[in-house]
Length: 152
Image (cartoon, rainbow, N blue to C red; front, side):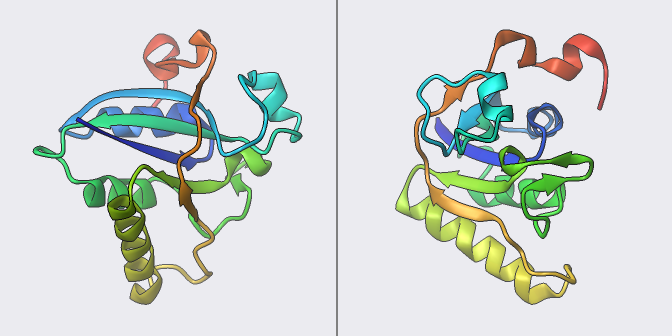
């Protein structure tokens, strides 16, 4: 098993999208990329922690590649929007890939560069690609939100 971490706006929809990918074993929502230990949702929404809303994806690389997960990531949000996705505005909604290895870093950059060169987007891709920091699991009411409350 391997892990991947992505931020693509509100984590509820991102979690739901990755749960549908064959080879993904588990997805948890949380916070990463900031400076405050054990942040709460309210802390992250205060824009003082630097954390992004992220999903931590456990996957079987024999069934799904990290490259494929990056393709899914780019397909489910607009990576050209800085610190927002649709109506959600703030640094916690930034587009980000947090990598767990040099190979993931290289793959994430290659996928981004391929998309940038493809002309698919009119504007520049602003996705942050950085080494993973601590994943802070979000409050339980955020986990599997759409499964509990309906939605995508």
